[in-house]
Image (cartoon, rainbow, N blue to C red; front, side, top):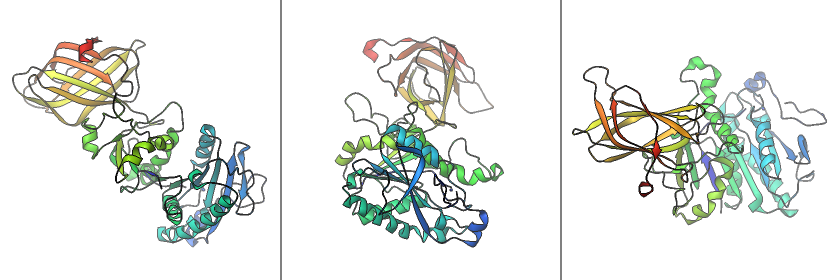
Length: 417
């Protein structure tokens, strides 16, 4: 069964064909993009035997390729300038660091380099046919379709899909970076799938304004290959429901696990097999900078104001070493009613193990008029990333609007946990 792992972001970018000892990715000029290029597909194999020096292979010369191991194809996309993808080498090395496999870079820069997108897209099926011919020969040599994995970026995702269709959905796995609409067994939507934090918001950001959001998918995937950043995603019907904390029960005791973004998303495949149809949307948020990880907490608040209060909460955590991390829960106003628990999803850039102090700020968003108070009967902080950690509480707080209140938390009674 074809297993696709999609999530939204954007483009990709590629050294000359020479008789060099270590073949490199085809590098073309902007002039080539203007005049256009004819299609030529070069397959470059990397393994742990040749980590940094590629072997050019084809259906008759397999080089170091071991047919008993996983074979991962990396397929780039549209090349409007002819330059190499800046992420390609990092992706190759990262894949080989986590698993002993064959990594094949599909260099179709001659064909993808053009300023006219449709000219590049018209060549994608031909690239897929070249790959089909190569895979057919690998299968003859003893490889298995289950061990074929394709990672496609931008138009490379389309090529990967065409190859998958040629094998009637029997490829082991396809990961497509660069498409918004739900198409896969699981579709990942970072930050809702639109503008990405840390990317320029206006054209004044130069070239990054056009490619940063699109390329973020590749860098998020790369983060999944590093030990210090396992990005958890949450199956949900909408980004709004996710932000409101309605879809974060996975991973809790007695619940199914949460899918992980990127390379290890396939660990969720047993759950995917149970879905009918097998299609899931998963949402998550990221930080502005690498490695992009966000750590989720629930802030449970019970108030005892006589009147309803609506507003946002900013929470700051400080550990014993003085490190701080802050979350502004202001995507939409929360409604606080007397003796009613409100559970707010807080997102922090750092994961502080030993929280020594917590600060809260309540705001209605109004710059004029009276300042309100939020009378808190109980506040509880609980980690989603580490549900085994003790939950932290505080009782009988009064928050003056727009005024920071700092306090030391205490362990919640076990009956509340």
